[in-house]
Length: 474
Picture (cartoon, rainbow, N blue to C red):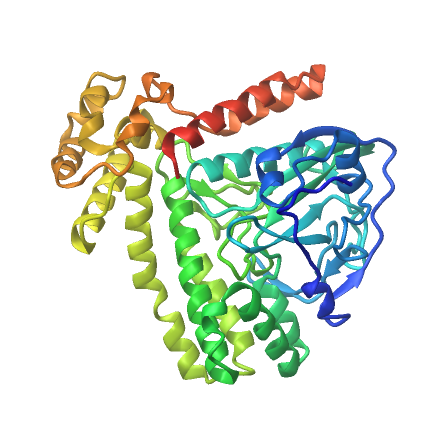
């Protein structure tokens, strides 16, 4: 198998042993039709030179990569699901396939799967993924990356030729296996499982593993101090993540503790939605009857998840110190949200007071805009601040920007310098509308595939999101 000079496999999660994962066999699929391969991502881990057939050997048949772990591993974890503790979960339709270092940064990344077959944690599930579900995840990760959200990257999507039956979509439906490239699949629930079993010793082992590979700046700490320092660092990264979701108008939909990883990176997209407009009560999952994971409640939900991680760490650290580490979340989130909003607007920060004021003014404008101002156009119209004023004020939303909330927002812009003004010369900003990823468009893209096996709208959408990614430069 051809790999480049930047290819560097690693097997350190596998070396943790049987307390943390179970070896499993991938499903044997009747077909392997390559529907998406992320060559940009492949180039970062030295796999860009694979032919399509070699790609399918790796990401449909899951033959081991050179020097990587010898067999797939279903990771062990528990989790709170809608705040009810579930000790019977784990990787039920996926596994850790390989670990590779990222070229340039040296970060250790995981290749993990979704829909690759049954495992000891499948319970009553078939271990499969619908093709529509895989397509939705590819679109989500492409769009979130373009909007500056820390996210896993969809690496490969292969249609597998099985007919699946689901209660929440027309059946039978087509099947697929997805591979994602993520900055660790170690979850909050990985620690919760060990706490549930009273294994303080293994919590210490896993903390040491996480610090060594993902938080080396904490390597001088040890014992209880290390656990507290790690919680503080995870809290900071997680505050950044949820701030970036909010600035992107993104609703994850299922913020269970098994869907939160220790690096503050978003992954595992099911019933997600992007906001059509500012609505704090907007939910993504039809089964979220109480709005627990509504858009405006995401910071609260994430903080609650962090408290569960702290509860697991309490077996190896002092409770007061852990509470102090958690108490940093509110201020960190406030600062990260202002920074995320400024990044989306293509502006350099000034100071805490000014940055927060501008972020608040933008949210107020989005709220006042109602149905007439969708989420994404604000950031498109005002990218670069005053550098885009003439363009925005002759565009389709000029009347909204002339109103009270728009005037207040515009009054703050002259104090901010454009961070990436050269981007405004790109063709993307010559259009009247930005790239969005709303529910109806996803349904249209899927409809073309389901009805005519027409993948052109999907390919076109990926290309247009790529143009937005290049334009925003996030």
